[in-house]
Amino acid sequence: MDFILNKKTVIINRQNERVMTMIKFGTGGWRAEIGKDFQKENITLIAQALAERIIELNENDLPVVIGYDRRFLSDVAARWLAEVLAGNGIKVRVMHRSAPTPLVMHTVMKKGLHYGLEVTASHNPSIYNGIKVIVDEGRDAPVEVTENIEYRCKRIGNIKSMEFKQALADGLIEFIENPFNDFLDDILSILDKDAIRERGPRILFDSMHGSSSYPFNVLFYTTRCTPDQINANKDAYFGGMMPAPTKDTLKLLADQVRDGGYDFGFGVDGDGDRLGVIDSDGEYISANDILVLLYYYLHEYKGWKGPVVRNLATTHLLDRVAHALGEECYEVPVGFKHISAAIDRYDAVLGGESSGGLTVRGHIHGKDSIYAAALFTEMYCKIGKKPGDLIRELRDKYGDSFFVECNMPITPEQKEHIAKIISDSKEKDALTMVPEFSQKPSRVNCIDGIKVYFPDDSFVICRPSGTEPLLRIFAEGRVQGQAEEYIESWKRFI
Image (cartoon, rainbow, N blue to C red):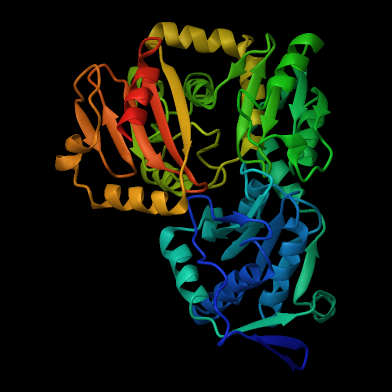
């Protein structure tokens, strides 16, 4: 590898250098193990590929905004990205502090930019980091953009880079000093602040050592709530836990909400786009239940009429509630870009997924735990019921559901093999590729993994993860034990 000093720009000649890894974007961006594939050459390679795309499409009229979470190497990687973009003559605006992904998406949307980058591996284990690419209107980059970046990564000869301090001096890099103002003001403008102030709930917040502490605290203090916080410190190991707001990872939050007499608790993942809720009894409110509760509230209490969107691996209780309200529930593949596109297409009130991400009509085109938590707080204050009690009322009215998921570790080779089998399948042949169940399937869908539907509105879906080396199996039953039975059938079959 040759390094050539060209005025203020370092040009790294890679023509005789083998690419260290195959850059591959999944449903949530590019993610890789730190020190193995997430290292400087690959990070700068992605930046150079994006820079060449920007220049070729004449999109260098506007700066690229870069944010980063609190993972190990995130802030350094953000600088590496900025140095390469600046080395290609592209202006960059860098967040001056760690930032949740929704903030970067909102900034791209609000400023009318072409691109944004967030250095994060979201909810992945601490050994991972990654890069999310955000495009026009603050959307997750579509497949055609990420595939183009992958293609360019394979063919890059030179990486151009300008030292960070030099780029600052030349005005190619600037810091965004107060990036949260517009984001928080837009959320506050939609909330019923009087209703929240009148009730003034006590809230315990678990930031899971992530990047969402500042916006959460500002929102809760502004609306006269009484917030307390746990796991607020920066910890590259996330306290030894996965930085994902699940029933297992929020056990400490649940105990402290119950024992401390809080009205409810919130937990969010490392980059602030997934939400978990604990009610005053210490009961975990699942992501599926959050979707159902918020859609019902927005439709019936705020008067936001319209359909709802969910992905293939999300509860069908949402469908039953929508149909009872005279609305439609649209099903899309996994990947939030499909949800945000469908919200626009159908003018839907809300869209979300069982992994904890959602957004609403008129907000950003990506997951936002901060706005979701604000709406949830408003709902609690206006309805005046515990979330657990309210979801039980809706289940009694629209039918019970028992949702279970299972993750099976697989090698990258197995993952690729399974994905190919599924992509080669035709829906008419798919019934031959599923196990025998206790009841006969009504249909099979192969648009994203293999989803089996049953006449009683239960289902099971098996698909390779788009972000981790896992095979994911999700199932929902109408009676206790039914979902577990579907999953065991799939495990035996595999």
